[in-house]
Length: 224
Ligand code: FES
Image (cartoon, rainbow, N blue to C red; front, side, top):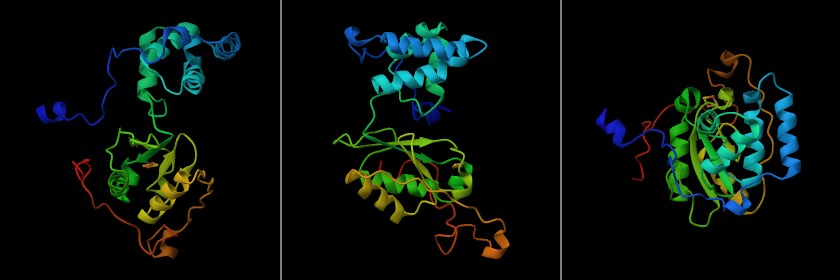
């Protein structure tokens, strides 16, 4: 237990960091307030609107430091603690300043058994950062995330709350980083899953000759 506490699996945000948004900029415009009021009206109770309001706040401020979560909670009319709980539960809400591209690598069960940790460690080594960190040039942040609902095309990652990159291989990771460095976005890809694995010799992936299996322990230690 002691080791677990010393090395938390998920790093919690600082409780009382110095404000990241200057007081003079910490407000919603009248138009933004009106949108939040519309959100609130569309739910039976105000707390139903907090996810959309936090999303609006993230688009405005680019991330959600505590003072922004508090401002949003006040605008929605719910306790700060409740909004904080929502914002810190979802990796899609950024609690600190992120890189231009946020690479959310899924290591939940399906992705894990199909090589999700191999992909995470490959990406960490390639970019020279650990999960949770941002490259010096501010281009890339890596996050380790829970299931993103694309288990059938595991292992996968998501780019900045946008396109999914399915059936990851190291070549695909290389192509993704090259594309993002060149200012290209990753195209939306519709993945059709095979209906009968037996027809595919037990390999449900269509882009490699064999399904990769779990090779790397689920601890981000390879470049420590
Ligand atoms: S386990 Fe990775 S998308 Fe579901």
